[in-house]
Image (tube, rainbow, N blue to C red):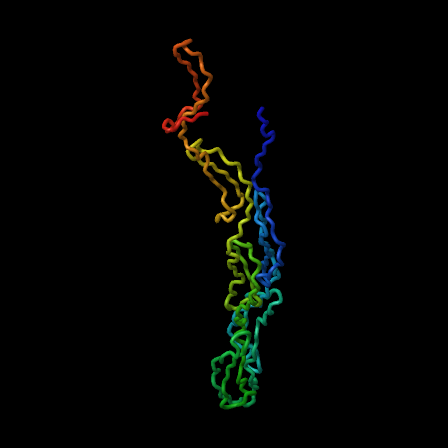
Length: 340
């Protein structure tokens, strides 16, 4: 009898990719602090070594910030302008006249201390007249205007004078007075360090970001120019990522679309990873099948044995028959009879 067919059969299963978790590098060192005082930030980065696939765990944060430079910034004392000098305390024998100013900003974190809030200068230094004595003759000019300050900031002195045309300074009084001026702090421009080196790119490919920083070594004071940006970013690793191919085995060929006359059957495979350029190869293949013609000629079997003669003598007839095993199809009727 006919031999037995295959007793086992195999087919593919569970063709989806195995899960792969995201893998990242170790953290870099923390970069420079964005501020030397008053509260700043510094950051560190890590980059992706392997993107997740097949439903694996996604990537964690690739950048981390922390506070730094939290010490109070140095702030110098600020004081108001001086008031005008008051009247002299006495009319002769030397007195004082005073002026004052107030504190606007107390110093912090070791900033420059406040100067004195009151100032006195001598006045009416001439001797007082004594009854019975001949009074000296004093001929003096009026005080000149106060001269320019000898410093533009940080505390200087200005002077005013008068001239004596008759008499002595001892008898008639001082010829020069001085006062403090331009006590406001000097304008200080911001000073920043050189840029740090660019840190590691946030992505190994496909477009990422990297940054560099600098710190303010001197904050601006007294309306000096403010500090420029202390952080700068740029794009990096813009080249497309290499595609990781994870192709499944080919499926079995599908059933042919036609039983004759040329049909098509296909097989497919899958790739769970993105592959926009098709670099991993095609995911579908097709081929022709059942290319034989659909025109079938009539097919008949062998003749059977001869039947009995219809006459015992004088010439009779006997017959034998055969069966049709395949009816003609298509243009088969025009084809030659096929004997089986």
